[in-house]
Each structure stands twice: as C-alpha cells, then as structure tokens.
Amino acid sequence: MPALAPAFSLDDHRGETRAYRFPRPLPTVLCFGDMVSAFQLASWIEPLYLKFRDRIDIVGIAAFRGVPDIFRELVRTSIEKLSPKEVLIDWDGEVAQAYGLTFGQCRVVVIAPDGTIARAVNGAATPATFQLVTESIAACAPDVAESPLAAVAEEGR
Image (cartoon, rainbow, N blue to C red; front, side, top):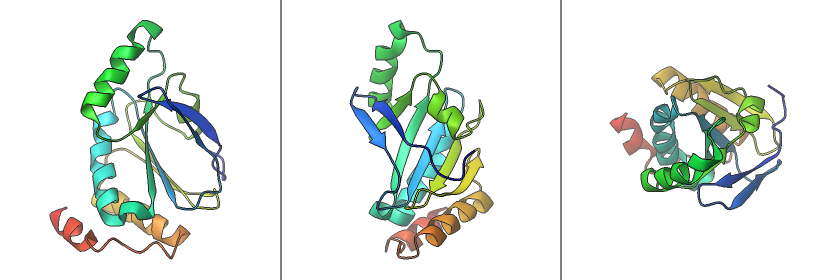
C-alpha cells in the first residue's frame, strides 16, 4: 500500500459520483467491505462516529467486483434499504485493491488530512485495534477533539 492515499472516484449507491482527493480538511477513515465482510464494518463505523462525530470523514466503500451489470440495480436498492448513510460502490475492485482489501475481511484505513496513510487494519474491531485506529486519528490531527458523547460511547463498548 502506498504511503500517500491515492485519489479515486466512485459512484454511491444512488448513482452519484463522489471524488476523493487528498489533502482534505479532516482525517478520512475509509471502511472497505466485500459481500463476505461487510457485516464486520458495524463494529467500526458507529463507534468511530460516536467518538469523533463530524470531526472525521467516514467513507463506506462496498467492494463488489464481479457483480454482473444485470444485478447492480438490485445491489444498489439493497444497500439503500440497509444503510442510512451513503455507500460508495467499487464495482471493479480497483480502489479496494489499491488500499489493500483482502477478500473476506473488512479493511479500515485512516488517512491524515495531508493524505498520508496513518493506519490500516483488517477485520472486525477489537478493543486493541479500535484503540490503534483512534490513536492514529488523534495523532494525525491533534486538533480533532473527541465528541462530548465519546465517554458515553466508550462506556457502552
């Protein structure tokens, strides 16, 4: 995986193209999942959101390489029903591959505002990996204070 985050553009599940180029104003957390590992992302996305709120940009990316064109609308509709947030779809798997996604394991990548990849971990969150990721977010943007609700979120973990 490169030291600097590669730029990319993907369509979201509504068909709107989203471009990500670095640097960006906030730390960015890319959360990749494929058809097998997507459920693992729940252990990352909500706890990170509760800890940092709008102080980071969390981007969900579904790596659905190999899904035939005929089924793509069904996939988009399913995502819309299941996810309250925007999900980008990587139909050819190139972005997921560039960021090191391994089939069957979700991948969480922390990118500093300057575009440096600060941390990447695979699999569902554990207390140890969650701490590594949150420390990486704090280190790459020291002015990113925790949300006032972070203590409540930590108690619930």
